[in-house]
Amino acid sequence: MKASKLLSQLEHMGIDTVAGVPDSTLKQFCDGVQCYQGGLTHYVAVNEGAAVGLAIGSYLASGKPACVYMQNSGIGNMVNPLASLANSDVYGIPMLFIIGWRGEPGVKDEPQHVFQGKVTCELLETLAVPYSVIDRNTTDEEMDEILHEADKALKHGDQFAVVVKKGTFEKEEPFTWENGNRMGREEALEHILRGLPRDVAVVSTTGKISRELYEQSREIYGNHDNLFMTVGGMGHASMIALGIAGKRADRKVVCIDGDGAALMHMGVLPFIASQAPENFYHIVINNQAHESVGAMPTGCRQTEFSQIARAAGYRQARKLVSMEDVDRIGEWVSSQAGPIMWEIPVSLASRADLGRPKESARENKEGFMKFLG
View 1 (cartoon, rainbow, N blue to C red):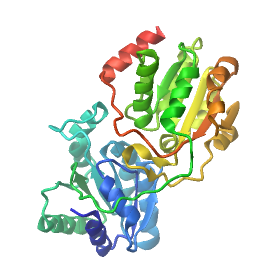
View 2 (cartoon, rainbow, N blue to C red):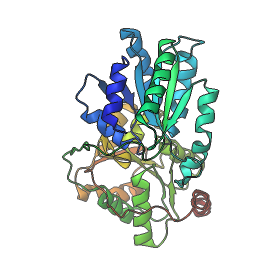
View 3 (cartoon, rainbow, N blue to C red):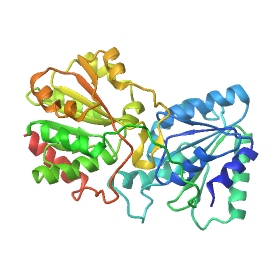
View 4 (spheres, one colour):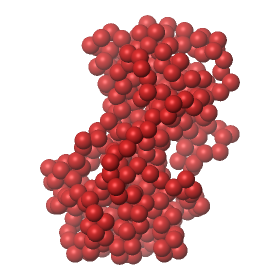
């Protein structure tokens, strides 16, 4: 199935707005949206709930339903605005969902997707959202019928979901861009690890940041005992780190975040600042993109996280643009009281042979808790 053809069909249905959060299963669809030459307005939202809110506003202003795309893990973020606003028992706001199905039962996937994959269709049923599942074998005639059913639901003021299996969309023209930053992410992470004292607890965000930290920790130290990898739950690593810091005043705690993750739940920044944890340090690796799922720009490329953290009340916040400054993070963690944020602009790049953790998520948890003692 060509993403460009589907987008043209959506436009023919009267949809003129597409909003969402990128997903690797939907990479070809996301590339298609970025390269589409038609009349669709596209927004990369900070989280899936925000995309639903935007779709509601777009409909109120134009009378035209919007399309909201996401990974199935994002269903949790969209539940509140969907159930308490868009549902037909409340305002009855029509919208079409395109949902990438990670963790599909019977298909090998990463551990953070397994449970979500099992309950994806059940969640849609609970939310009273009719849906159809498509894959690479879905014919044009079958897709036409699915979109016909979707169109009927939208005209009735309801929602409809298209659940997309891996490999559904054909590769077309890929969307590519560069952010202009010179520093490599994995190199910066290596320098951070080498500089941090070994008794520092490190909490890392989902995606390639955790994978690179895992490999670098194994390479440098032969283990990753002090690293808790937040392999799912995008945007929640900083609050997990805060929870650790609050219970263990004897430990320095460093959260290594990504820009897309930090954007997803940015309200945590003033909350962290208000708690004033002196043992909390926040590093935001900023490549202005959702790089782990295809490198689509975040939609907030102008955002200066260090300035936001400073305004939110962090004790200090700085942007580090040289490796010499990155090398001093360990020194600063040892000598300065938090909360402190360091924002590090990095390029869009990762190794083709980047591996994944060999241990299970449960083993990572148990090893990290043993490290904390």
